[in-house]
Image (cartoon, rainbow, N blue to C red; front, side, top):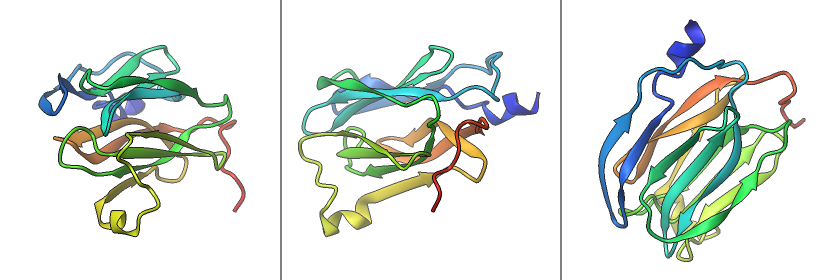
Length: 166
């Protein structure tokens, strides 16, 4: 299955707690239908910084990145016609950064951010990492090296997940 190959690293995450992130783990390829897989909810845990990000997938799996510190962030649901087309991380050398912005196909943005995050600061520009889905794809997983976002996993977009007109 070609779609399964695209998702071979879908379940990449980080184990750890608080400030120290430890070894990465990944489960093997799963029998899933990549054509219908999408993120349906974003949540996490924050304090001053982002301790954990959680992506709930349409098959009800929850993929967690980071540790168990901080306080829970209320889940933010994507609409049925939305998908993640870009993610921006405000980097910080510890935790998972100070904040994340998820850009959706509808034009909406969802944020998970710690209290020390300042997305409007011009000094943050050198500390932002961005990953964007190629045309016709959506982001379904994130990949970290330590606390830095270094990649994203993609799957095909469904016909109902239309791009917002520019």
